[in-house]
Length: 237
Image 1 (cartoon, helix red, strand yellow):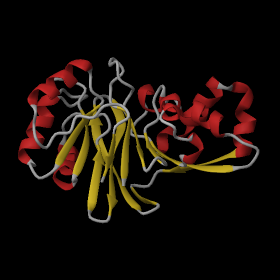
Image 2 (cartoon, rainbow, N blue to C red):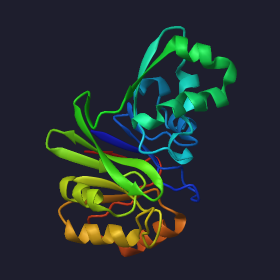
Image 3 (cartoon, rainbow, N blue to C red):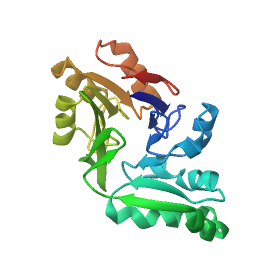
Image 4 (cartoon, rainbow, N blue to C red):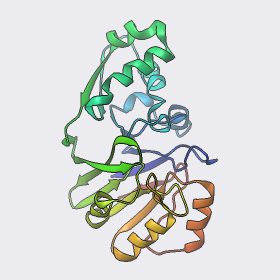
């Protein structure tokens, strides 16, 4: 499994908005700037056929219209979007706002499968959707992706909660929200990551969605089982 960091920052950061690719074909979140950043890395957008959305804040799905527009061709393609049922309408609504004269073309050339199951299979990867706690926005999800004996978790945006602890105990690698120095009821902080890394010393923790100040603080800590990624980094698992 190849994990590529398209972005590791929060909206206030100088880094790209948090998003990831698995094997360069499975996207986890598609925030502002995703498409251009992917193309700058030499990856073809039309190779991405599965998109997992953690939650519906703009910095996690606002590039979906540009992705659809870029991959439309004179032959029908099938795209799988993994999300919660209540937000299905937002996908086409956003495209209609971005490209009002291309909605018919979108429906003609792209078939969108909306997958709302808790557990599903993407190629060789067994995937589980995990409910997390992101302040007043409900629902918000993380994902656990399993490949053979390796489990990788993505918390999405979340406070520290029971299901995040569950993911920390289960996953060999956990990509964590680290928006703040001190976590609150919307986002985890450096303090939460340090605590989890200490209690689960055999697991690797990868902070993401970092503000510039949280990144600086995390770098200063120098913890062995914490990996601090930069935009464009690739980890082979």
